Image (cartoon, rainbow, N blue to C red; front, side):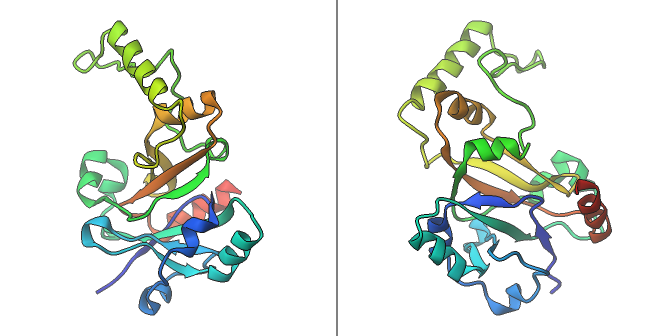
Amino acid sequence: MCINIGYASEIYEIDPRDITVLPDCAPELSARIKHPEPVTVLLGNRDQNRPDALVCGREQAERALNDGISYIPVRFCFVSNIPAWNLIPLFIKKFRYKYKYFNTNIYHLSAKKLRQQGLERGIRTAKNAYAITNKRWAIPEEERRKKYQNLVDSMKNGFDDNYPLSIMLCRRAGLKDSLDNGHHRMGICLDLGIDRICVNFIAAGKAPDILTSIYKILKK
């Protein structure tokens, strides 16, 4: 069976405690990962009961933990569910949906740093929260404001790890990571001065290697 590995477009600054608890990646999988970063994690599949696993970097994570370092750079990778020949799901959401899956763990990071990485598809504030242009799904103004305020009130005591933000790896055209869920909470955290949040990851597929290489060159 051919296993196609996809790679996050970003390096994420992650709490080392989230890394040291991971099991080691199976050798047959880690051997397929090209040019891993010092700390690299292969995401698992929640539906298949396949856990996230550490490809390399346990020593670095343990050293950072002992030194009291809050966050360390981590590269995440995943097994692509979309066949290499099928490009349509990379561009069209409704076709991508049947391929996507969630990983198993959550990872803590900085909300400020996450915003700097530009993964949000739109900045949500009190003024535009739940503002849906489609009349079919539009929410009345009073209800919209109340819904947003209720969310703000629920977060005044801090971020709830039971409801992580979701980042989809290679979401945009199979190349660029993007925040998939949690835009309103992201904005509220920054407004309230809550910096430590947690995320999980979604994956589906990746663009062909040639497109990925071009994207990396243009990104530099």
